[in-house]
Image 1 (tube, chains in turn cyan, orange):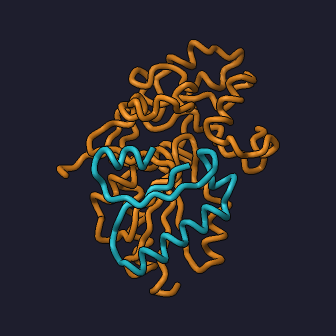
Image 2 (cartoon, chains in turn green, red; image 1 turned 120 degrees about the vertical axis):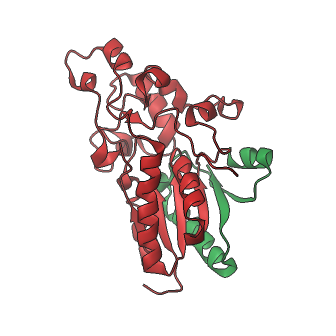
Length: 56
Length: 220
């Protein structure tokens, strides 16, 4: 959904895909946390406020 | 807290509360990242269940028609609650905040980002509503992009009339509960989804969620 909407409005979003149901914080907390940490590390390196989508 | 680390602010979605993140925050902390959560206005400890939900025998028609006790909770209230938490997080992290919104929480993180963009490193929409400015949640739910979404099939009553998107988290109807699980927790075990599960994800008092008219507005 995120990639579709962002494409339609011409936004600047990096989209990660996680094979899970709607609530990976419950079903895949470790995988979700790793993605969040990777986003943090990348964002700290770039120091820019971008939008990130996480489609499930 | 090291100044080189970011702090996460994690915003739950509709019908949930801060405990949605209970399995994530320990992992983030183990890796050196603090994480702050809250119960949004109208959710969690701030939730008020419709009176008809607790009356026996249960009257489905009354439940579908009752005006939501949280109908008066506004997007602006949710936004300001999260702005305050982002400012707290920024004070812990030298302004390095990563704001995460799950599902309907996406509406709020968009509004927060418009108010305090200088405090944010990134916005993360976790299966979240990243909608064009000014578009209400209800309009997004009715958009063709979400035509296959399961959650709207769970709605009880008319969101516009009752002032909330209402589901029956206490339903004992097998088909309804099956759809509830599929909509939110398709890859969660049956035992974890059982009503008595210690980490049952749907808060019993959270039958009502954000009203359908809430939107984030800016000139951009």
